Image 1 (cartoon, rainbow, N blue to C red):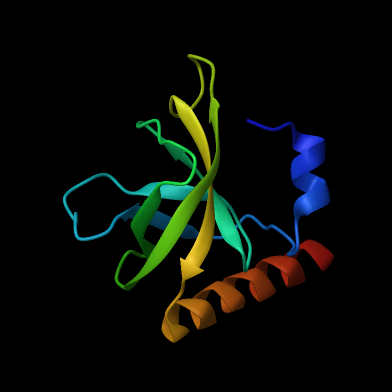
Image 2 (cartoon, one colour; image 1 turned 120 degrees about the vertical axis):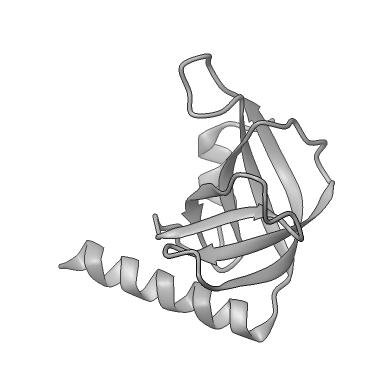
Length: 120
């Protein structure tokens, strides 16, 4: 576990709040979760499950309307236990390991849109 100031120092890419959701790959019946923040290098999500650092996860990324999704390979880089009043028991940082071209384009578009919205 690391503190927020160390996380900020290590960031290569800007993080934004974007209208994207995720779920475990190939498990369409499980509840999707909103991505807390997103960057070209990874994302932060809330989780009901505690993961070990280094765990690799296949994640479906979904657009806000849920009509389109792409599957990416990620790795857990940090896990924080949250308080009882939080949206989930755990806050999890995921680093992208394998991102298909279509997913990369979707992520880049969402980030561009969010950054433009912040500057307006």
